[in-house]
Image (cartoon, rainbow, N blue to C red; front, side, top):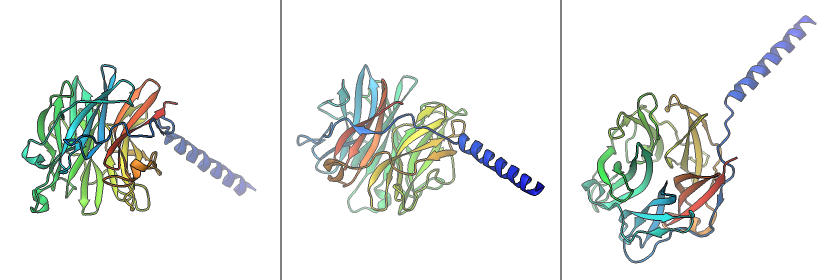
Length: 335
């Protein structure tokens, strides 16, 4: 009958449109499965000084054919500074005897400097880090974590540029700010950065900010760009990892998520290359999760926290903190 023929045509057309739409959103990650390059940490606490309690959450860059880690080091008082280590093979590291950044500014007193990310733009290294002011006995707003910036040409000597995203302020964040992952190129005449803000006491989510000059930053949206998702690996925390990578298909950001059981694992999100405030796709399940004893037991249990990313030959290297005490490395081949 004629109506049956018309129905079949409409079903076929709907199927075709759905297939075209699905094809338009297909995204293939630029790496295969992750695997640990070492079953042991590549950096562990040592001595009785600035890194005696913890060495974790590293930024990573390649410089002069070596991999450099700028990592969070913690002493037995709980005060953090940033250490420096270099490696020819990405696994065995030699450390500098002294940190390259210590708590000096008022907004760093008591807690120190934490959790670096590094991006190189026009020959200058931009370091985002958390300045943690922690004064015992004072109210929360007098002791807080804020996203800060410093620059360097050699990764050793750093010039501070102060707090770039103040805590307890902003278009939507009502608490601390942390974890600035800067996109390495200008888009639409601006620089862009994904960061962590706190929308409420229990919701640590991801925001996006823009800047004309990499020094002055403002929220680009009046709401988080990536929210937490109940029941998933990022139900409790959604926090940027290393600086994003620009691909033909978009801006790829590796991020860290915490479940409702406070297990930290690794996800990814893809943003529009012409509009960094637009989400194209997002991981439904983690790429990487705690597995080894030193990732499951430490200062904070059940944590892998990726902050360093280096492309090396035919693979990607991911440097991460394990249980807020150690540094590990995983690799993923390029397909």
